[in-house]
Image (cartoon, rainbow, N blue to C red; front, side, top):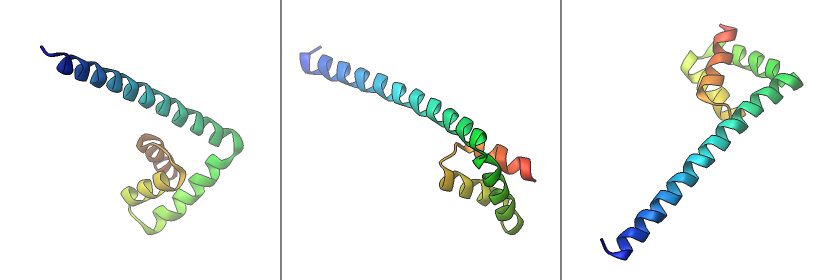
Length: 85
């Protein structure tokens, strides 16, 4: 195996490891975001906003809207929408 192939493989593995590390950090930050929202009372504001959107839209569009506006994960946005149904 030529050295260029080996070095390319090593670079790919390093970048892959870095991507997984960033994904784990992103998940941790999302969990921290939810905790902060719950602690500051902003969580209730998001729930009331989701309830208002849900009254005029579908559940899927409401989840999408809450996700985009507040930067929540799909699971967290779905939990909020489900709690106001």
